[in-house]
Image 1 (cartoon, one colour):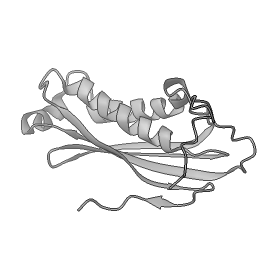
Image 2 (cartoon, rainbow, N blue to C red):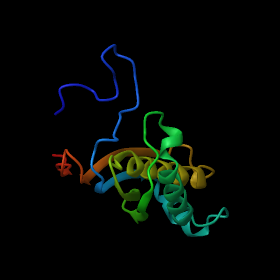
Image 3 (cartoon, rainbow, N blue to C red):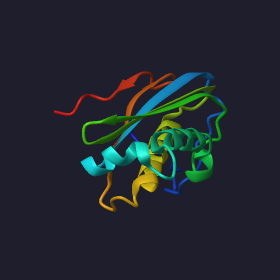
Length: 158
């Protein structure tokens, strides 16, 4: 773990980290989210009058990943070489997995997390007419690779 937070200068003010000296390497990150839905909402997914919530969520997540630096002030704008979002119906809801990749001097963890979050919010938006009690939970980074800090893999919860 780092000794200090990188987005703060010596006086404690937030700032954008200078990554210009970092080597460009391939970097990839995977994040997940879970949208908890009732059985009634799950059963109604195929008949949603707004369209296919899972497909709209996929597109929204991809679009969001590309706009991460506009949403999170200290994120660097990145040329993403790959973004994929999968939304899958599973027991109790929709599991979302987002992958982002680039060749750059900084990582893509935030792009993957934003993609998963926005895809989850889109599922909510597409189904909220049926149930206001929908919960979005467990938005987490699953893995990352590339860069100075190397590999990270989330340990399974106990």
